[in-house]
Figure 1: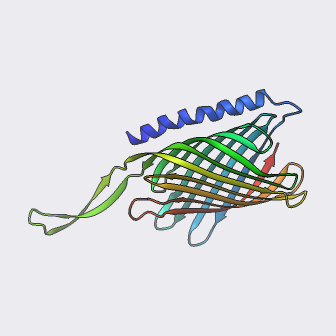
Figure 2 (figure 1 turned 90 degrees about the vertical axis):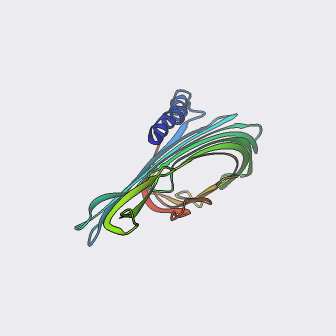
Length: 272
């Protein structure tokens, strides 16, 4: 039932992303072009353990006189294999983010933000959030752009199931030599949040740029944070290489679960 709920929530959250993408393309013009990028990263290891990972994603956005739109999708799949254990999947994650800004002036704007994070190998099956509030562009020139945002929102998190292997015993409590597994279904957590975010873009040169983005969703039950640090180097007008370090952190997690998940990636980007 829990998985069915996740699959039902996903299309509801994805629909605005698809509608936004279609709307951007329909309203593109020479004055307000739609810009985007497609990324792909592959990694293969061979030896005692064979492993492979695939990172992919796309971004699309448009900056108009009064409105600014952004859509971001990321996916990660990893698997490993050994002679004893065979091949098994070790990571699978999908993340969608969309944001719409209405600009009051060059430096002040209101924002609407939504996100959906589906991670099959962490303490949460999925985390979905929405927030609205005020944003301020502290710096805006050809070399630097720095935005800060704050606003209230709401988050839904589905805690992953946990399994525990126990020894089988007889009526007197003596071990019989057998084992059995007990599965505890994870709870759904719903929480009002305050979203704090900042994004800093630095155009180092005509062919290189730096990005630092931080997003914090603070609630009574849990505080979720994510940080992305990235360096992009252009190879030509369409292709770039991107080195990125991504962290997501949950303050409250079930027992025996890690608070932080970290990713380091090198990807090839195609810009349009």
